[in-house]
Image 1 (cartoon, helix red, strand yellow):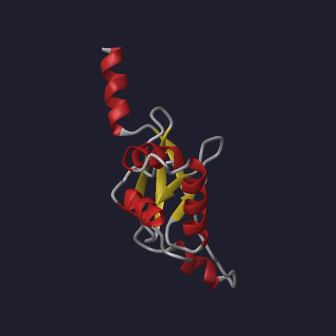
Image 2 (cartoon, one colour):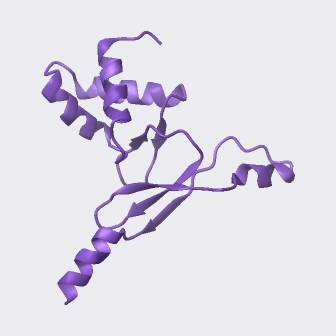
Length: 128
């Protein structure tokens, strides 16, 4: 994969965020820095980075894909109100348990759905 200024910009934009952005979110950020960058370039490079294992693509049902710089073993939690996606660290990789039964695991993705603490606080204030 040939290094270019735009690829470096895309990786840096993702690396400096913790909110698991969509391609559109990265595009909005980078468009201010480089008005010539296209959304297609962002999509193409994010997908290529994910295919090459440089980043993680988080596919969510009925939502746009999100991208994650953190490649360590972790799960995700999705707030059903604000759609914030959070990393959930795991202590023991589940892969090891599956391997005990002769099942070779390539990847594990678990998505917890619920309501984040900020939205719970907002909802409680509305009810009061």
